[in-house]
Image 1: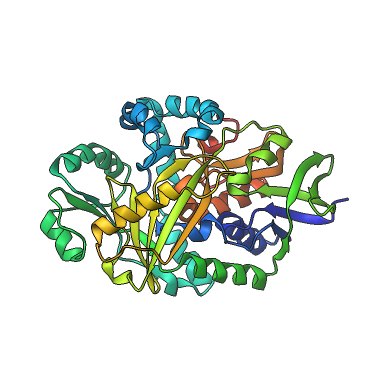
Image 2: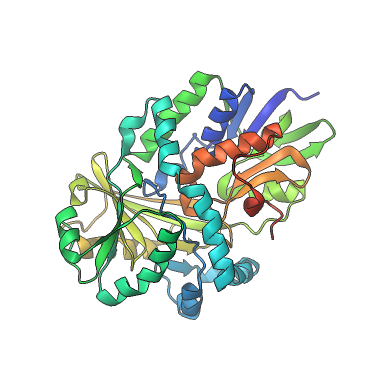
Amino acid sequence: MADQDVVIIGAGVIGLVSALELKRRGRSVLLLDRQRPGSGASMGNAGTIADFAVAPIGSPALLKQLPEILLQQDGPFSIRSGALMSLMPWLGQFVWQSLGSNARKNMQAIAALTLDAGSRWQALATSINADHLLHSKGCIYVYESKASFLLAKQDLARRAALGVPMQWLSPADLAVLEPHWPQVEGGGVLFPAAQSVLDPGKLMQELTEAVVKEGVELMTAEVQEVSPQRGAVVLNLSSGKRLQAKQVVVAAGAHSKKFADQVGDAVPLDTERGYHLEYDGAEARVSRPVCSAADGFYCSPMLGRLRAAGTVELGGLAAPVSGARVASLSRRVAALFPDLQSPSRVWMGFRPSMPDSRPVISPSRLGRQVVYAFGHGHIGLTLAPVTATLVAACISGQSPALPIDAYRVDRF
């Protein structure tokens, strides 16, 4: 007989919010992680709750650049040369998903999850007394040249057609909203409904405290194996201990693939290595998250500091921090704000990346004994509340409010 009701593997933002949702629906929840809750990509991001982030990474435009990208190590999308061979199966899927019709379907599937992200987060933050950490001035994309602005209009028009609110900004408009940003010829786009987090780390602390207060049990433990059996799921821990649960949620981010494999679901999940630099006392450089569209990173104002975060580096879980990647991001920040020559701190973490940029949110091939919630890429923070409601529906066997066919583990 199972000694646990629901066990969630992974205490990032997806696991934490899912635990809170399940507990509020009357389930007993044990949350396992080998690290401190919320200490990975959940706190290392740009802090954007991005209703506008509906575009998949793979697109026809990116495909045209792929040969150049394979040789470029400091661009907004790069692949570590040492990881290229191991990434070939993933890249094959990525190329297929980047074709026109597939990319459009992927954008529609992502948009179905993101468009009410702000209201969901506002409700969640209010319920845990953390709404003081949310910021509601929107987010901006900046285009340095008129040519880059014109090229972006097709992508932006697709977003608008899916319901993303936006306001076009002339160079003069941009200078009024962000007077410290260097002048540009192209202009920008304001996404007014987007929210941001003034300190993702503090938000994760508030969320962890709320989870514990609601009665969720936290355990620091590393899961080695998930073994579904009749009537229970056995979890073997690195300590040698065994747990049995009625149901398990796999929300281990970039580390989720091995658990899906053990259950019998082959998932094309790989790892994006995310970086951020922080500059203490520089938060006044921008008044909201601002993204340099050409360079693919955000400058986000946070409590007592400016954070520069973003770009995509595919390269697995084992390689150390790339000094070249850090130096490249540092140069780009210094080009914007010449007085910021040296960051106060550097961070690198792992994002779970699917070839179609859609998360996996569904029961396993064995049914709702094991439920998946991983693969959110750059938008795990954004999608945590909606993911939690879908996970709760899957666990209980109810029909989810949003159809999950587009996010099923067996879609490939």
